[in-house]
Image (cartoon, rainbow, N blue to C red):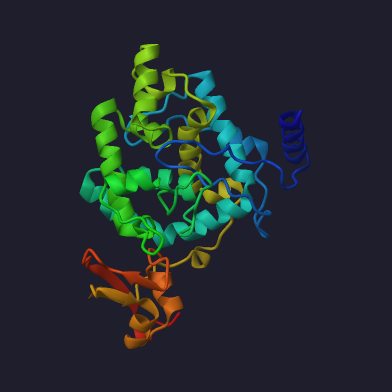
Length: 317
């Protein structure tokens, strides 16, 4: 009954041209990365897209250089469903777009260096909405929404005072390692992306049991069935935001955080507030540039060497 009510609200919004404020994304998954699924009130100034604009799909579409079979009815309908959801989650999607110009310029070169296709920036976008403080109820965290065990398996520090899942460069490198391992095992980048949601074993076992080789031919749990289409919805929307009702002036997009210098900190007992003051800045400014710092102090018993970003005096805020 609840699902029917949501559908009726969506249709009413489409018919009247008003914003739909009751359409929520899929629930939390249990794979390597868990989407935030945050919901907020629609953003002011964002025009509502029309049904025709959303349902008019491109003639061809690919993900990571692999064809998306739009000739299949279920593929088209699944993509339209996620485009509707993403388009009408206006506050969250607007913030993701605004943040895209801050984080994509950092993420893309790391993907390219690792040999991972550029389209995976949209996986990151779908996972966290480019919210640098994103955390899920299942324990995933950071822009890439890595689970603690997965992050540690790729060399990241994860504890209450230091959590490198919030380190953009290191978490991106870890995500690349996971995706490359998954692609090597599963055979396609699309299946690797699905495993980011469901886990390697979850995808591999279903492919084997059903005798299939591709995501689009395989039956998955609901969250994973929607997952690739959610990524594709962000890809389409990012390429042409205005078509989907997001008329953001170019000068309103957020700029990269660039005004900083990097210094090594490796003391046995680190007081981050004292470190900030000693370098002419504040703890708040230090945390903004280094969100992986999660506490005020750190007992560095293992002798880690941290590359810490300090804001330049002339950079302003």
